[in-house]
Image (cartoon, rainbow, N blue to C red; front, top):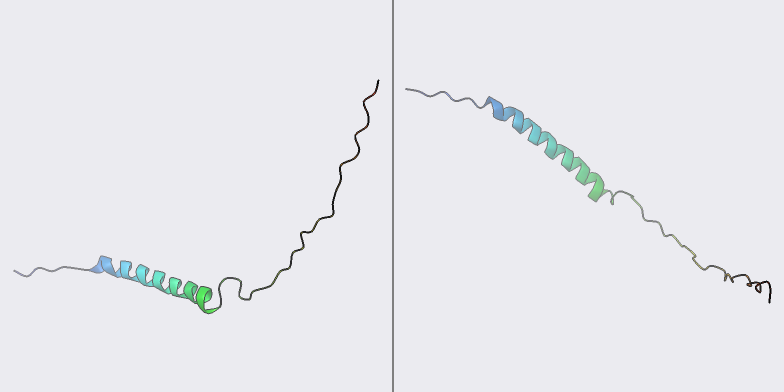
Length: 64
């Protein structure tokens, strides 16, 4: 007696897995081969020196 098995369901799964591998390869190319998300690095100089601020003089209480 010959048994006939079919593997038609695995074809769709192989197609989906192949598509995921291709998409991941494209994303990896843009992230690693092209220097990351930003592309070029920029040097930013931030000055955080603030002027000295003094509190106003407190007036004397009334009635003294």
